[in-house]
Image 1 (cartoon, rainbow, N blue to C red):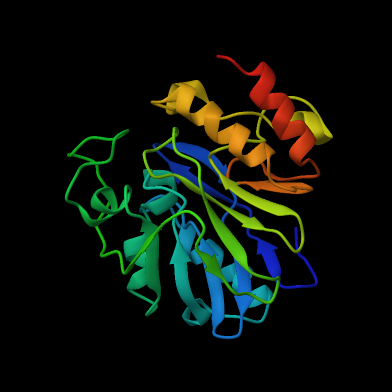
Image 2: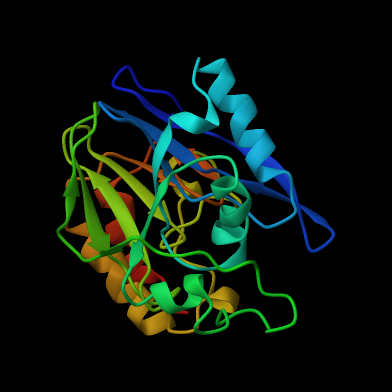
Amino acid sequence: MDTDAGLHALPITVDYGGQDLAITPAVVETERGLVLFDVGPADSGAVDAIETHLRALEYDLTDIWLVVLTHHDGDHAGALARLLERTDAVVAAHREETPYVTGERDPIKGSGDDRYPPVPVDIELAGGVRVPTLAGPFEVVETPGHAPGHVSLYFPDGGLLVAGDALVADGPGEGADQLAGPKPEFTPEMEQALESVATLADLKVEHTLCYHGGYVPAGADRIREIGETDQR
């Protein structure tokens, strides 16, 4: 998914725990350069794959000035240290996620033995924060449940939701039916996560980009349906 306004999905397949994992980081253009949403697992080749995408867009890794983490899980934040070895990017995460990213706490879904390299967090996010981009401002939406400080990013000008793992689109079905709620086996607080789905349903979303599953032409109506029926 690419938009004329400068928002680009970066679908890649990486090694994660000895298995292939399809993920979709994304970048949006701003007057200062690129904002990257999530990175990928550590030692997976994610940074090199992102670099390849950016070169096709006539950018380089050094054009990334801000990395926004939707949450601290290793498949999203693990490669951040590697990225920061090659860029001077600023790192932003929700205040509830910060201690996991910085190493003050071990990731909730991992162990101390295999945690990814910690990195500093420069900006602590909160709901309602807006960042200007060439695709219009995106707004930070607090969507906890899958992780304590999980956030999604909403572009009201284009009706686009960058969902992180608050929603997924890698299951069965086609079109809008691919969009589903967070996976219970990876969501410690499922009831809270479904409340977050309801929060997203109240936004004027027309299409959705999921980290797992990529772009789906589905918005608020489908999200509302998920919130009403997905009581796992």
